[in-house]
Image: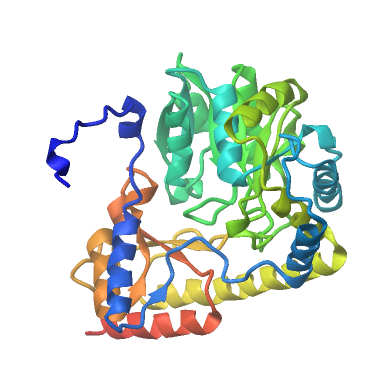
Length: 397
C-alpha cells in the first residue's frame, strides 16, 4: 500500500500542547538491550513491584462469578463510596459524605474530570516545576494554560503561598498541586498547604490536590487537603498504596456544588469505572488487607532509607529527602562522570554502560531539568543493591 498518497488528517491544535514522554525513548533502548541479552535494572517506572493482595484478587474472582460486571452508576457503586468515606474517618479523622466521592477510571480520569469541570478556555492554572507531566497536559486538554512556577530545594520542590500570590494574574483560575509529589517524593507542609488554600480562596479560585501517594508517607502522619475546607478538590487512586495500577481505579472528592457537573461529565466521557475493579476494591479496606498494605509501606520506607544515603555515596546530591511516594529527585552535578550536570546524557550512559534505567528531568518541567534525575525505588531491595554496585563501578572508572 502506498501511504504517501493518503490524505493527511488535520489534528486538533490541543495535540501540539501535549508533549510525549521523553523517557519512553529511553525505555525503548532498554528493551532493545534486553532483547539482545543484557540484564537491565529498571528504576524508572512509577509502579509498585507489589501487586494486589490475595483478598482483593479473591474479591474480584467472586464478583466475576456472581456476574456483577455490568455498568454501574457514573459516580461509582455506593458500598465503595461508603468504604472510602470510612477510610477518611479512620485515617484522617474526617467526616466526608459518601455523596461527595466520585469513583473514577484511575486518577487520570479524576484529574481530567476535575479540569474539565473547572477550567475554561484560556484559564491559567498554577503548578510547581518540577511536576508530573500529565498534570499540565490535563489542563491543556481542557483548553487551559498551565503555568509552571520554578520550585527548587528551598521550596521542597513544591509551591508556596508566597509564590501563588506572586504569580496570580488576571487569567489565573486556580492551582493544581500534588502532595507527595511525582517526581520528587516531597510533601507540602500542612501549614503551608493551608496558607495556599486560603490564598486561592480569597481570590475566588479552585485548589486541586493530587493525593495519590499520600498512603505512602513515611515521616509523619499525613494530612489531607480536605482538612482545609469543603471547597478543596482532591484526587486519589487505588494504584499506588493499594497496588492496583492496571485495574484503573481512582476517586475524586468534590464540593457538593460540583457533584452534578462531574456526574454529567463522567456519564458522557467514561460511563463508569470498571465494575469488576470497584467490587474488588471493597476488599482493600478490610483490616487484614490494610495490614498487608502497611507492611508494604514500611518496606518502601526501608528502601528509601537505603537508597538516599547510597545515592549520596555515589556522588549524587539529594537536596530534599523524600518523605513519601517512591521517588528520589537527585542532583547530577556532583557525580564523577563526564556527563555530570547533563541528566539526559547521564541516563543514557547509566543504561548502556551500567544497565540501570533512571529518568532524566526533561519530562517533569523546564526549570533546570538537565540537572536532575528521578529514581524510582519501587523495585526489590536486592535490585536496588545491585544497581548501586553497578553505578559505583561506572563512576569509579
